[in-house]
Length: 315
Image (tube, rainbow, N blue to C red; front, side):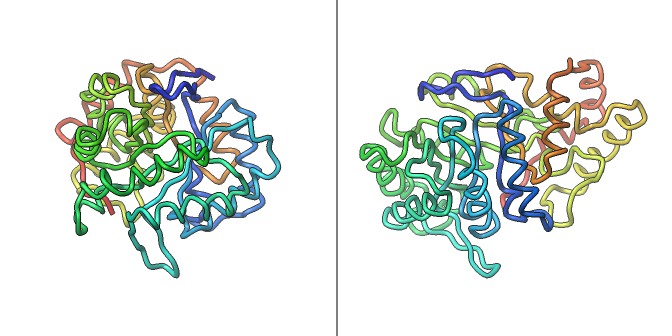
């Protein structure tokens, strides 16, 4: 496993990291015992960053992850969770207030069974953009509350997440220097969309530790294909299906190529993927240990063609 500097945090993170959203049964039903075992497999494979959120499975992912973490030494992993996006009984809720952010951190620590969070993110800030106060509320209320927890030693580092790169940059530009230490962005450094590459100079200039999430673009880059809820436009879905068929015909699963591509850029500290299946973790670890076929990358991106960098609204 390759370990890379994580912005100005002083941490070194694994090139491939473990996303615990699947532990919440977000995508399909899970076997919780197997899900718990998956976390240990990820760490044994060299992953040292684990990301979760109270939103995933409406608190279930944190509870299941907590079961796994109670069996593992605390110094074996860097733990990341989030504030701002929640849910209960199938209903999604958002609250980016300082009070709720502070409460949320302590609640997450209880579910996770830890007394310290290495990295706390404001989750999917674009939703606050449409709420009263807009993104300025993240700058003037949510982030300062988390910084206060950092000063108390409750959390180690503070960051933000979003699909929309422009929102991430706006908050960084309007925050006091150094307040935002890390950023998690998804679906923008993968075979069908490498827009994040255009912003690497910016994030590096601000000392930001960068996490690239969803190397399979939420299923677009998979042989199984996208779930019914996927927000991508039909033309992009079809282009990725053709690319997947092309890879299959050459005996090179598109999932393998996508994972290899996502971790190939040393300027991106870590790429985050999620699974509740230990076999999937082992397979992805094997994929990234092998050399990438750059000729196939070029052919696949040519097939995707004008649909490259086509994005969508969050959901």
